[in-house]
Structure formats: C-alpha cells, structure tokens
Length: 451
Ligand SMILES: Cc1cc2nc3c(=O)[nH]c(=O)nc-3n(C[C@H](O)[C@H](O)[C@H](O)COP(=O)(O)OP(=O)(O)OC[C@H]3O[C@@H](n4cnc5c(N)ncnc54)[C@H](O)[C@@H]3O)c2cc1C
Image (cartoon, rainbow, N blue to C red; front, top):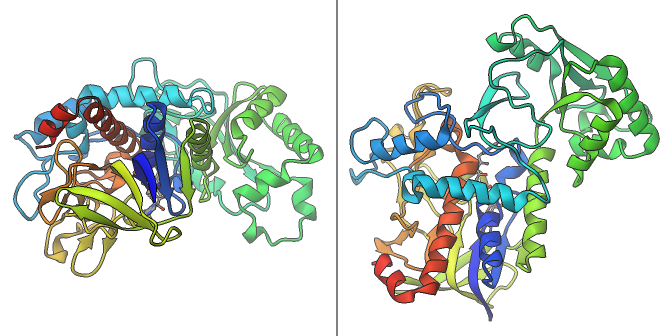
C-alpha cells in the first residue's frame, strides 16, 4: 500500500500545477500520469480568455472574467443548459475572479527560474502570430514570442524556412499575415536556410521533424552555418519569424545564444506536433515537481477507485495492479477527449476512470453546431464532468468530498473557442489545492464547506 497526502491523476498542465502547489505546501504528493498531454500540441503560451462564449473579443481577460460571473449568475446568453435544465457556471466563476489572477501570477513566479514567461504590463491580452499567419489572443508567452498589440515599426518581416523540414509551411504563414491589417505596408519575405548536416542526412525530408532539426543543429559547424545564414538574410530592425526547432530541453538558452550571435529580434512559432514550445513547458514543470520532492509515477494509468459513501478511499493503477494508492485528497486532471479524460460513444459521453457524473445534452443530434468553424462553441466541447463550486464531482448523484476535478475535463466552457485552456487548467488546479490545504488546516470548517 502507498500512502500520500494528495494523489494527482493526470500529467498535463492542470495535474502538474496541482502536484507542484501541493508538494511546495509540504504535502506528500504523488503524480500519476499516463501519456503525453495537450502540451505536446500547444503553443507554450497560456491563454486566459481570448473571447467570451458569445464570440465577443476580450482585451483584458481578468475584467472579462467578471462578466462571465455576471452572465452566469442569471442574465445571459453565456449560460449552458445541460439536460437537467440547471445552469453550469464557467469554471472561472467557481474559482472566482481574484483567485484566477492569483493562480496565474503564482504560475509565472513558480516557473520564473526554469522558464521565464511574460505578459503585458497592463495585464491585457497580447496577440501572438500563429504558424498559420493569423493573430491569436493570449496572456502569458515565452521570451522569444513577439507580443503584438497594435503598432509595429519593423523594416521587414522575414519568415525563416528550413530546407528539408516537413512541419512548418512558411508560404501559408506569409500569405495569411499579409492579409492582417496591422501589418499592411510591411514587406513580408521567406528566407530559406540550408543546413549542411541536412544535406548529408540520409533520411527522406518527409520524415524530418522539429526534434530532428534540433539535433541536427547541435554540432558547432551546423550551428555556425545556421547563425551565419540568418545574419546574412536579415537585418537588425526586422521581425524574424522562426519555427520552434532549436534546443530540446534547453530551448531558451539556445535561443539566447542565437540572439547573441545574430542580434536579431525573433518571433518563435510552434510547429506541427511535437511542439518544442509546449514540451519546454512540460519539461520545466516536471523538473520543478521532482526538485520539490514529489513522486511521479510516469507512464502509469489509474484504472479505477474504491468509494466509501461520499469519499474516495483508494485508487488502483495499471502497473501497481492490486497494490492500492491511498491519499487524503485526490485531484483528477485527466483532460478532455484528446487525452481520454472524457470518452464519447454514439450514445453518451463518459468519464472512464470512476464513472463520474457528466453534464451533457442528449440527444446526440444536438452535440454539434451546423458549421465546423462556428460562431458559437460546439455543445460537445462544453460537456464534461460536472462539479460543485468547490470542484467536487459527483458519482451517481453523490458529491465526493475528497475528490476535486480540474482542467480540460470540466464542464461549462470551451477552451478552444474561448482561448482559455491554459488559464482554466492553472486556475482550477490551484483552487483545488487551496481547498485541500484549508480543509487540512481546519478540518471542521472544511467539512462544513463540503456539505
Ligand atoms: C491541440 C491543442 C492545442 C492547444 N494549445 C493551447 C495553447 O497554445 N495555449 C493554451 O492555453 N491552451 C491550449 N490548448 C488547450 C489546453 O492545452 C488544454 O485545455 C489544457 O492543456 C488542458 O490541460 P489538462 O491538464 O487539463 O489536460 P491534458 O493536457 O489533456 O492532460 C491530461 C493528462 O492526463 C493523462 N491521463 C488521462 N487519463 C489518465 C489516467 N486514467 N491515468 C493517468 N493519467 C491519465 C493524459 O495522458 C494526459 O497526460 C490546446 C489544446 C489542444 C487540444
């Protein structure tokens, strides 16, 4: 038997945040994670709220969270109506406006030594140029992401292409960026770099991915050729858009070296998966958790749990077989459909580990909107595990008082439509651990709160 204060299930951004916050608070913590998280597909920037569920664009995400609260309390088009007819508040409403901001500032501070992240001084969203040449609102970005607001004074925008690399399409980026009004009048050009090591590599270009390029750039000769060509092809007052192919595990140091060698201003864009910018974030979170003394059962899967009334008493994993893991509190952060935290069949959506209650609309014909790219969230994206305001889920209608759900598995929001995925994951994980801590500090009050 293995005993912990807090057991966290799922190693995406929500699971890592919960595990780190818990371990840093002195709780003996185990993190059990099955496989790759959505971070391997992400930009590595943290979206807090890019637009409201109505589609209205958001400039200041924290101010807009207050509007979610107002709307979800009663007057609004933002409400989701599950089958039961009761409203499901947005997860930010459950966490509360000021705690959302507190959690994001904690996240930034916690990562500062491993991976510095930046936001605008006035706390507004900034625009990030995507690999498709569009602009996406986000809040917290990595050091070599250009944070666009409105004014630009670049001489030229240079999109760097790498000969023999498959996962970045510079022409699409260039063509779309040329249509963005903020960049009208600024010449946009593609500059193709030829790495000598790529020419000697026997593999077909279609097999070469970002990690391969990062490795090919490691020898000093390849690195020098790369820096030299970049310097020749660009000028100091250009914005140089570079696919995220440099550095694996040490990307920020490698980019700092690149800037030092070339004296250029870079904008790093994520590529098709594996996304080095997202992996960079995961690597940093992993390191922080381990350095804090946490136990990580990586590559293991939680299969089921045992309930005693309104409490989860133990969980069982694939590798530990019939040896239970026991904890005072359990945090569940197993993600959405993407990570199999939710599973959809033709009839219904289910949470596969414990069979927790899921908010969803039936029949299936109402799961999606008419258009794939829609002006409103698709209903199925807002389905998920329903919780009370303390993030406790229910099992067969009974609230489980020592289990908390967070991140993409939650009902009541669409992370993709709203651009709120990273923010909700961090805020709900932080909120869940705060409640575990206050429950342990004052069990009597905690118990009252749960009831
Ligand atoms: C393609 C894509 C790109 C995105 N890009 C961005 C972005 O750039 N910025 C942003 O802010 N948001 C982005 N999002 C949204 C955001 O990434 C997600 O909302 C957020 O990362 C979800 O984090 P999570 O920890 O809740 O879940 P996940 O990242 O899905 O992690 C869940 C983890 O739990 C594990 N797991 C599942 N079941 C079990 C089990 N039984 N036992 C053990 N482990 C289990 C999974 O393997 C996975 O590792 C993106 C989402 C997608 C799908």
